[in-house]
Length: 116
Length: 116
DNA sequence: TTGACACATTCCTATATTGGAATATAATGC
DNA sequence: GCATTATATTCCAATATAGGAATGTGTCAA
Image 1 (cartoon, chains in turn brown, blue, yellow, purple):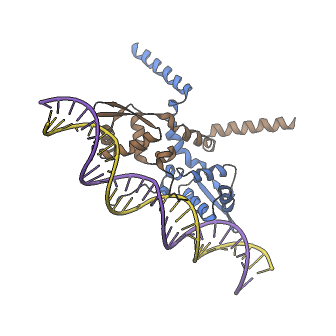
Image 2 (tube, helix red, strand yellow):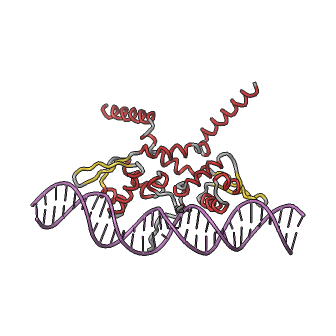
Image 3 (cartoon, rainbow over the protein chains, first blue to last red):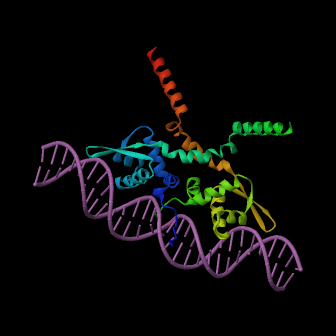
């Protein structure tokens, strides 16, 4: 059996967005599609770096590409972030007071039901 | 200047939860505090592995420790996940139909305002 | 066809990471 | 003190990663 140092980033959305520059790319694409050079310029990195990050994002399904002449326009596919959203959301009550009160209320209702 | 292969996991919540076993630990601790051995058993890993993951989680502020005799009980500090929640939430409208419709409605209101 | 441009890929290197094994530390019981 | 238990740390090996540089590929225009 082989030992893996870390799950391949390309197969896991959580790892894909663990890299700050990749999050920055997604934030840029939220405004609309962009070419690779646009992205590289915005990030202040060279084109190959941008291409590499985009490949990772593409492989986990967070972006899609549209080819037009020489350029490739990348577009956000934000639904790929849903697994992360779903996961963190289960913890939201820990800092959200409104949810906290709702939970307390539901707990109270339950205890009243039992007491009947 | 030195070249960094990846931002140190210990300084970034996103990286800390990029590791599946660490997410699993947080999920376990959501039920209540646990000792290191409890966690190691639940994950099916040896104690040193659990300790290492817990150290990372501690350093990014996602868990805290309570010492009691020989044991250390780890407790979830879920508020540390808020940055992740806040970040993904800005993308929620991309898969949430209700938010989508709300956005469309607001856009419509805005265009009406302009037209006045 | 040739050159320029946009992008992707490959090779290389320094560093990070995980997991295993061994060892250190600290508390507790005898 | 000594053994035991719970946990942390260190050392090691295998692999993954990001970034740089160089190179490949495809498109367009002259």
